[in-house]
Structures are given as structure tokens and as C-alpha cells.
Image (cartoon, rainbow, N blue to C red):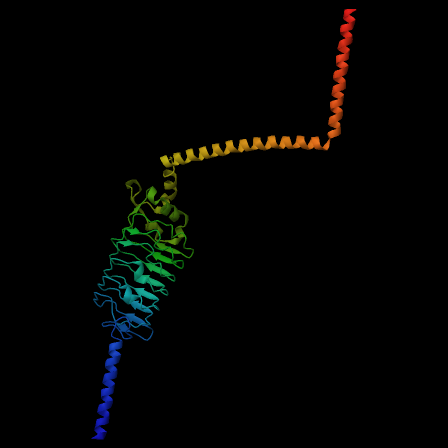
Length: 325
């Protein structure tokens, strides 16, 4: 009986230990297992593509390096669950139903280098959405039919970004302020958007004209509006817009020139007055200095002047006497 009881006690201890372990690791963010309907391999790759998932997978291994959740129906990327994957380098979220991405979504993914958000329903990219992704090298956001606005500072902190593809969306204008500051950017996809080729998009058209080698399918990056420029390449109309958009001055331009003219006039008047004051003071200084250096000559000159006056008066007196006689 003693021999039989020992295995039973050991089994009980194992069951208790298993319950404790299960309780500790029950949180989906802290799990080291593999999500349902996903495949995990020894290379820290989690493959969940095409599994009809409607929510972000749980029980992801903390050390996951690559996560592929493409071709599902996921509507949200929960920041709390995603940001536990601090070692994530590759994330493919293409062909889902994502509607929104915020700055907190990728708050802790400092190592992420590849991100694919193509074939979703994104409508707008907010300010510094990808700010935490300081090592992001490639970003694909193609085929989001509702995507019509990208904030000017959306990529301001992605200094390592080399490839950006926003083809086949609903973009009409694009502020290039943060893009032209990306020294490493070597490939940009813009084709398939209904681009406006008016003055509000002049900078983009001129940029395409100057650095066309950076743009994927540059020949297919064409204008949609206005009607007289439809189907023309953005790079082709860049110089034309530069001429058209700066042909006449606006009211603010005239006001600027009036203010500048007044400032220049005031500055000239003050400068002339100061120069006059300086010249007068300088002449007085020179005269005073000459008087201090040559006091004797001044005295002799004064004496000569008096002698000349005396002689002149004396001569006048003699002339009067002669006339009298």
C-alpha cells in the first residue's frame, strides 16, 4: 500500500503544480504558447494567415519576431496585446478590416522594421502614427479605398524609412514636409490615387519632377483633376504649376511688400539722421583738436588780423585828411 500511495501523492503534486502554472500564464499577453489556428516554429515566426480570425490572436509567444495575420477579418490591433511583443521585427496585417491606427498602437515596437497595412479600410493616418517605430525600414499601405488623408507629420520620426508605398488609395494631396526630410528614402509608391494637379499640390508635383527616380511607377502617377490635366503625369506638370501658381500676387503678398517698404524707408531715414549727427560731432571734434594742437598759430593769426585792421583804419584816416586839404 505504501508503494501504491507514493505514485498517487506524486501525481497530485504534479496536478497542483500544473494548475498553478496555468493560473500564472493564463493572461494572453504573457503566454509562451501558440495561438489557436496559428502555427509557431522554432524561428519565432507565428503564422496565422487565412484563418478567418475576427480578433487579434491571443497566447502569442513573448519572443515572437515575425507575426503574419494577413487574410483575416481582424478589425483592431489592440495596443496592450501588441506592445508586449517588444522583439517583433516583421508584422503583416494586410487584407483585414482595420479602420484605425493610432500612435499608441505601436508604442513599444522599437525593433519593428517591416509593416504591411495594405488591403484594409483605413481612412486617415494621424499625427506621428508611426512615431515609435524608429527602426522602420519598409511601410506598405496600399489598397485602402477610404484612405484620403495622411498627416504632414505622420512620418516625421521615421528617419530610417527607405520604402514607402501608398499606391491605390484615395489620396488627392500629400504634404511632403516630413518626407523630404527622410534622407534614406529611396522608393515611394504613389500610383493609382486620384491626385489633384492644382496649386495646393504644387510641391508634390515639383518633387516628382525633380526626383522621379525615387517613385515607383512614376509613369502611372497621374493627375485626376482638373479636367484639362487629367491623365498627365505629376512630374510632367510640376514646372507648369510652378509658373501658373506664382503668376500673380495675392493680397497678403501686397501687404507684405508695403510693410517691407515702410521698414526700409524708416531704416533709411534713421540711418541718414544718425550719419548727419556723427558728421557734425566729428567736425567739432577735429576743430577742437586742431585748436589744442596749434594755439600759437591761432594767436599769431589773430594778431595779424588786428594789425591789418589798424593799418586799414590808418589809411582811411589819411585819405580823409587829404580830401580835406
